[in-house]
Image: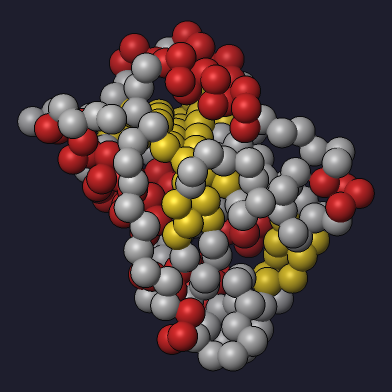
Length: 220
């Protein structure tokens, strides 16, 4: 049976893509920057422009527009210099008629999102992320009580060191291999790529729900 195809916009190094792949999708990533570590088919292009012309061969769409506008790791003054693509991408996703997901950080203006946390999956980072969808999605119980006191959202549970904020993202003060393990990433990424990714477990959880809807025709 042919696997459904999912278009991964603003794909980065593929944190979301790997989760959707594990859920059962074939992946095509699009990003305006080269992504040499993206683990699936990749097209370098403007995500907004690509979406307008190429949706007919896909079954679903995921979009992770840049989060710096809303991120606590970016100073308030710097945040105001970063664009907000969420409304523009939402309009194009709705117009596509395909089931879609938009992912972003807490405080981003998503509509009725669910929040996923690494504690729900037993990961070494909490890393809360929001997910808006055209479909009804279910979250998972957050298990913050399983983590030590003062456990910051981007800390690595296995070593008492944390990611430190830098301009435009995060970089790692501690062992990169331990951070990869904490995120559940088992292919090559740089520290900056890892800092801008979501754990694959998040997208796998969502992807299974999306795939069930697509296979049963139960789209909302």
